[in-house]
Image 1 (spheres, rainbow, N blue to C red):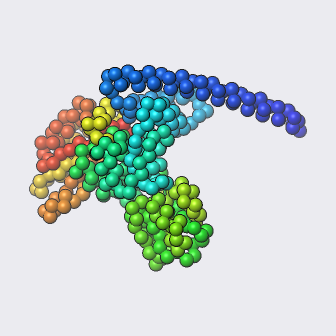
Image 2 (cartoon, rainbow, N blue to C red; image 1 turned 180 degrees about the vertical axis):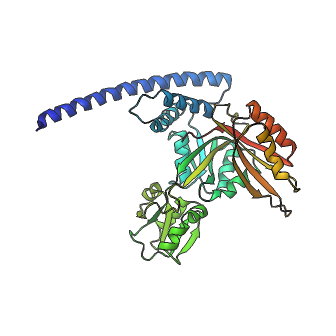
Image 3 (cartoon, rainbow, N blue to C red; image 1 turned 120 degrees about the vertical axis):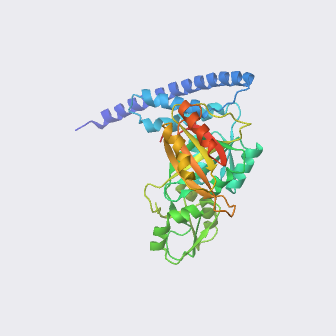
Length: 367
């Protein structure tokens, strides 16, 4: 039988070792911060931007490649995003707009991409996110554009047609929807509040467990949670973070119909405020196009991609609202606009389009 005294001594020795490593880490982090400040001074003199998403993606990819373990490779990205975020904030913290209030998945996506050392600008709508970023009141905006269950986020996609913003990065989240309420019970719920996408993603669960209960769409899931915190007859669908933010019980966990429910977010910026990301080696190019309504027009869109060996990863249509049964097509392809094959394919594609706009070339989410 082991001697408790020996166990305690061994545990104490390990803790002392961890404390010593923590002090070494802190010293190294401060050394890194000093180097980052020097880089920042050079960038100021050159007029370069502080944040380069392709550079940060390359740093993280490089660290994952040489990671010896036992730290998991998937743990490297969030750790280094926070380190880089803290270093960037020593100059000027970035202002990031997203759909609020506190506790939304959009806020979680913003923090996951930029780290927590940012100025958070919670907005009441996607329109406000685009407006603040277009006006320069925010350096970047974060908006969801696609869900694995419900497809494209219509309003966010439509806004790209009428603003100058372009995409500089992306991130995705596993979305776990929870039913939140002041009372820890399903009894007496008169209405469930959430963003329309969340209500759709939980349709089967709501039909089974709360049949006949009103489903009330609101501007965001966190707003639904906030309203539920004010009225015991209401329940919200939102993240656990939102539940903690507004002091609500998690009445039911993970009520989304698809257990692998994932939402893709994009990072948008104004081209006059932020340069286009350079090729990172793992990139996506997004564009929106329209064609004249004639036989074979959609087929003609795909031919330049096939002929140049460019893979299409997403193809989605949205009504052009012209009254003529015309559509905009949102397309994602593998590669960067500076890649020779992609550049040739886009040049040929543009020739067959009535409307053509590149929304951005940017590093793909590694997760």
